[in-house]
Length: 428
Image (cartoon, rainbow, N blue to C red):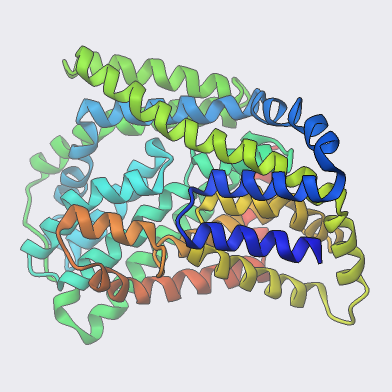
C-alpha cells in the first residue's frame, strides 16, 4: 500500500509540472520517512546522493556534453547536412536521405537527441520543405532522426544506463553502433515506402558534380575524424570512455580554434550549456538514489523477481509486458528519469530470465526514443516544431510511419538479441 501511494504521489507531482528531479527526490524522502522516520532518512541522505554522482564512469557524460557544445559552436555541424545533400545529389528522395545521414553523423558527436533535433529542425526540415517535401513528412522524419543521438555513441543516455546498471560503459557504447545504423537505414527505407503512394514524400535532389561531392566530403571530414578518434580509442581499449571524452574535448577545442570560433563568448556559452545539462542529469541521479533506497527498503526488486518467476508465462511474454511498460513510460517521462527509476528494479528480473544487460540497455533506450516523438510529452516533436516553425500536431502525424518502423525494429531486437550483441562480442 505504501509503494502504491508513493508512486501515485510521484505521478501527481509530474503531472502538475514539478521538475522530474525534484518529484523523484520528494517522493523518495516521503517514502523513507513513512518507513523509518527521520532516522532512516538522515542515514541515507548523509551518503547516498553524494556517492551516486561520485562515479568515474559517470564523469564521461559531462565531458561528452562539453565536446558536443564545442562542436556546435565551431559551426561544423552546419556543414553536415549540406555535405550529405551534395554527396547524395539528384537521387529521388536525396534530401531526405541526406537528413538521415546528417542526423546519424551529428548523433556521433552530440550525444543529445534534443540538440540533434533542434539543429536538424533549423536546417534539414526547412530545406526539405523548400524542395517540395510535404511539411509533415519533412518535420516528422527529422524529429525521429533526432532520436538517433540516444543510440549512436557517444550517447549520454547509454553512459547513464551503463552507470545505473553497473556494467561497462564501453560495452554499451559499442553495442549502440549497429542498432543505430540499422535504425537509420530503416528510416530511409520507410521514407521510400511512404513515397510510393505519395510522390511529394520524396522529390528529387539537387544535381551536383564530382568536384562538389569531393569538396562536401572534405567539409564533413573533421566531424567524422572526431567521432573516429573518440570511439576508436574506446573500441581498441586504448582509453576508457572518460579518457576518450576528455581527448574529444581537446580535439573539439582545436577544431574551434582552426575555425577561428574560439572566442570567449563561445567558450562561456559552451560551459554554461554543459553545466545546465549536467546539473539536470546529476539532480535526477541524486533524487533517484534516494528513491532507490526507498525501493530497497521495501524489497520491490526481489519481490518482483519472485512473483514474475512464479507466473506460468514464458520469458518472452514477460519481455513483451516490460516493453509495453517502457513504451507507456516514454509517453510521459524523460529518458534519464525512466532509466533512473526503473533499471534498478527491472534489470534483476531481466537477468533472471537470461537476457543480457547490455542488450537490455539498447532495447529500452530504443523504446525511450519512441517516447521522444509521441504525445503528450514528445520532446523532439516540440523542439522540431519550434525550430522549423511548424505546428506540433503536424510533426506528430508525420512521425507515425517512422515510429511504426522503429517498433518493428524493436520487436526484431527482442526476438534476435544477437543482432545487438554481435559487435560488442566480436570486439572482445
